[in-house]
Amino acid sequence: MALSVLITGASSGIGAALAREYSKRGAKLALLARRKDRLEEVARSLRSAHAIPCDVTDDAQVHRAVREALDALGGHLDVVVANAGIGMMGTVEELSIDDYRREFETNVFGVLRTVKATLGALRRSSGRIAVMGSVSGFLSLPGTSAYAMSKFAVRALAEALGAELSKDGVSVTHIAPGFVESEIRKLDNAGQAHEGRDPIPSFLLMPNAIAAHQMAEAIQARKPEVVITNHGKAAMFVATRFPRATHSVVRLASSQVLSRVKT
Image 1 (cartoon, helix red, strand yellow):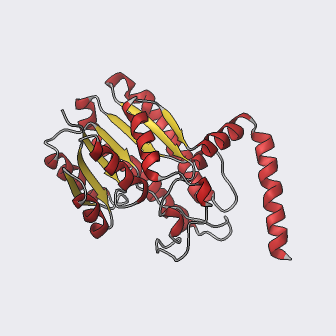
Image 2: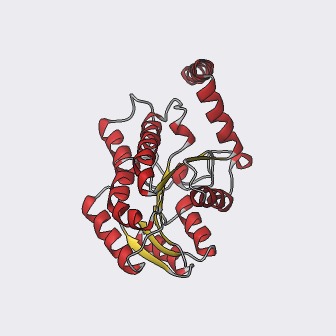
């Protein structure tokens, strides 16, 4: 029987790559995202894919979208990937309280809304939930406080939720990518695309097709957590095993950068 899969943030980047990966596996797809045109373009390129416009920061839209998805998928859900996310960059001094709220509304509460709206269907199918975290959920760097805070919160949610749902046969997989091909780094804090290349060197970027395959494998195996990219695994290992040394290095590097900027 074909899997029924719901993916948020499916109009580009990792979300679209996951849609393509699950399509290759013969899944029936419900694809959710804010950008209707981009979303429909992705859905048209795949078989058995339904485009459902949805802003995960809106309670009513999430519940409506999940109802539409269940109708399109015959009332059945096997896998939910809560992937929608944004990245607010800037120092604590530069970012406003509203910037932090926007980050959490999408990256944390958007995940929570998606989970709560789909939980009943996943309990019936003993299904799988995947939440999109980041290596930033283990290591917070200067200029990334809003994003890292949201990803630390997502990791905490996944850990607690996995324990709570184990008795129901529902698995929860926390996905922590390192540098993967994505549009998120090409968007400013207002969500507008800017010109130029990805600021991450190409040799560090994992193609999103490879990342999506690894993610889908981890979800299928019901792994509680998967870290994507070797540099991501290295960063997580160092940050969790040697926190004091990591913090010292980060602070030293930051002070050197700031001193160069000031001079």
